Length: 114
Length: 112
Image (cartoon, rainbow over all chains, first blue to last red; front, top):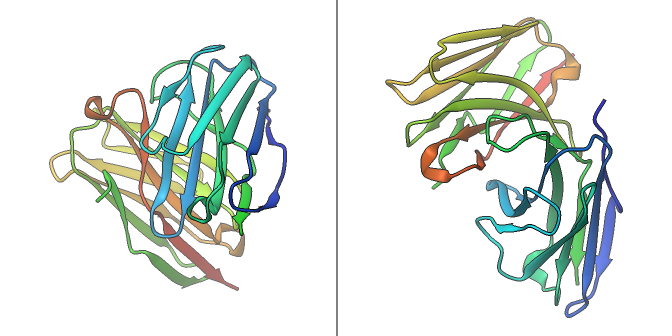
């Protein structure tokens, strides 16, 4: 079974802090994604990556950056956390390129920015 | 508003009843997927239906796709308490590049 793990289930940070969310997948998947999930808005894509050291902006990249130094690891960085970044963050991976591919999700990180 | 929108927003049924959730979308799609999310967890893929398919089954799940109406439905038959979750449709369309676009979801509660 594909396993996608996220470094923390819950995080509490203060405004202005730099926040790192880590995601690791163990199935040699090419693609990795970061979403945020807010009530009534569904999942919104922040960034995605089709290869090591490659990244592409999603629909809401402002205030975020990403890093993919190794194939299995995709990190989301909040450069200076703000209260409007309080949300559930979901990482996902898929085997090949293409939106027809099934995405496998991690359990999520619920981030609270005070 | 979003590419995919689920209806109803919330649904409460008794165990053993059928649950139907609908998804409408705006642009022509290549395929549509349904995902389930248990409370506070990640999403789990349920089923994918391609634009040239009209119906697919997987266990107690039945998905239909009507491209002329730009809509899909997910039917869960003989529901169980364990089916309590949020259900999301996600669309793949040329207009949105190589990305899945998720709807806001339907919250299903199955009472035992």
